Image (cartoon, rainbow, N blue to C red; front, side):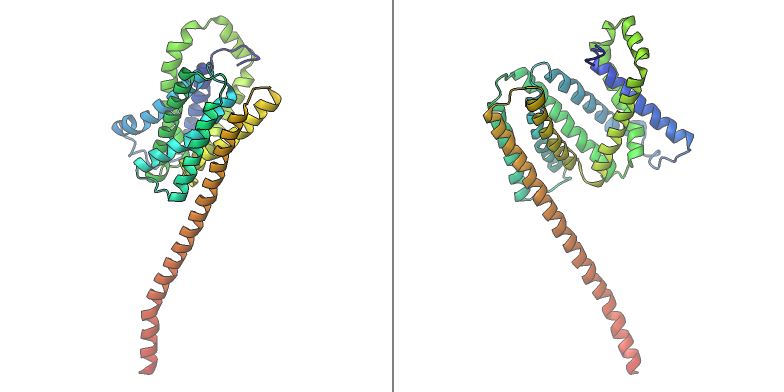
Length: 306
């Protein structure tokens, strides 16, 4: 975008989505892979379930890019620490998660840290913050819808890519048509063909990222994906402050440190909950096994007595 002076980020995103969609469709039809939920994906299901995911993805991309016009990269990463809070809230509303008090406390610490980091921003922009919050809401809702498809409806990652990516591409295409495509000229096409290997590399990286993200949601949950992203954002803030000379005030550093402490506390309590649940399930299995083995032993004893 910068070195090539290719100032059309939505069009680049559209290309990566089309690349991912085409690759997935080609893979499925070339190797004759059966899509187990093909009968489930009716036109009504696609409109009500898949298209909203595409719309929310486009909303996340567009509003996220607009926020970069008003806010620094470091502050945006700090605001993104609030996304897990929104994700948890929507998961609870959708009855997909029941957090404990410890988990809620950790989430509140993240909220507090984000608020403190925001109060210390020197280049605060209300428009930029509102754009970023809108992008976060879209992202949180997208993750919840995706988790419903992957875990509740039992779609696998390949099926999700196959059905969702074209919907994402459609909505981003609409946004690009309104904001970028009318302003393109022949030089854009020339840049594309002159650096086609970079565009293909971008498409491959986007495809890989989508596959990894959806695997994380399928194996863990949507909230864990955003919490891992929060840890990555911390490194990005540090990188921008040290190597790109972005100003990070002491208040911002304190607030973001509090957010990261909440993030670590969340992980700790989440691991403890999983271990406790695992032990409880093991005890239940052992009790059921003893109950089923009990009548057999009594019957054997009676037979030997006779």
